[in-house]
Length: 312
Image (cartoon, rainbow, N blue to C red; front, top):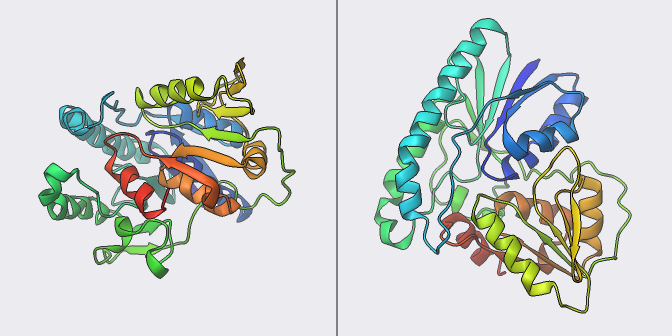
């Protein structure tokens, strides 16, 4: 089959968790075609250099620099809606000129079409609202369910048992009829040989939406630059050429291939990262979740919840 795979560009997580799916499709003799933009596009290009990649923008957003994201998200809501409509129209036009047997959308609301088998990936069937808007959670859940029902299938990257890794996000409400748990997805699945690298006592993984990504990087750099141990900061910015520099005892790299990243994570005594769901799945796959300090992006309610349930 010829399959269009479309991860959302809000940090790297939506792209990283598509990696095991892409590998599985290739192993089955299928033809994945990747659609993304920004750093997720470059991440996929580096991981799958032989695959065809179509650059098409997600509905880009930015966070506020403070502790609440409510105002920032409300202001950007019209832009997000326009982005959803535009990508839906883009897919409709694409299917007029090129045949695809399937479309797999990771959290892109508009990447569905009645003329092709469409699959939606999300771990967040329930969208956590900030405390002041808690009363809207059931309404927002129904709105999200309306998008999900546009797709033939909804794949949940988690397990059903004991709340899985996502807790309320995918277990609180009854599932839509087209939804199923498919097990966790990690880019580290399928890596058979990992040589553990113990050069760094602390490894920090930095990703996410600006300006919070940069603020997190600056905070960690300042916190560890004068430490007696060595710290590695991976800034979540895949580029054609890897950037690397040192500030005191902190080594800063723009990106590491999956095998190298797994190597330093296994060798570290302490891991620091945002509490994004894809990162949690990656750390769990390596058996490293227990030594991770998860720090939620300020005002990002999903990450704040995941931080709490994983006792970080």
